[in-house]
Length: 198
Image (cartoon, rainbow, N blue to C red):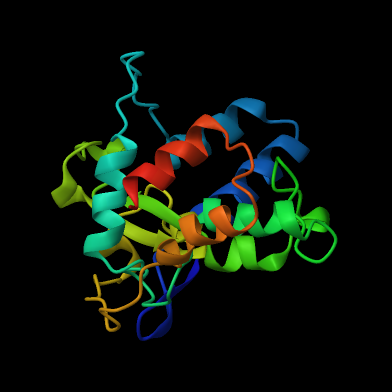
């Protein structure tokens, strides 16, 4: 699979295309069991869920974002806190739209390109602690999506230190802008973010 590393694209050992092709050829030849045996080469055993999903509090996440100066620790790009962008959407729904389910055709590309997200360096699926700040980093939406449940070693990525120590993801403008437009009602999540970024 072609994955972009910090030094450009690199090839990872990816058995999926070849194995899936062989499995499909067995199926086409009428040998369903042969296809099953081929898929054993890439067998996946789902990790049983304990049913308890632990997630860090907004305060902890805000602390991680501030520590990382709202910069993606994978690609180094500056990110913007999503509630800040949502405030602009409320003011300028035509110019800066956001679909509640992030539908691409109805959401301004800035949301996908620059939204601040939280990532687990060691994926929770791989045994990483879901709430330890030492396992949490700021990531842009694109890098977070590309990384998924892979490790840095699997991707050939390294953590980057923030380069702009003054960048705050526009959180310093969040409350002043909200006050300037008459303090419109905020949802619970937006209120929590405003408190956490004060």
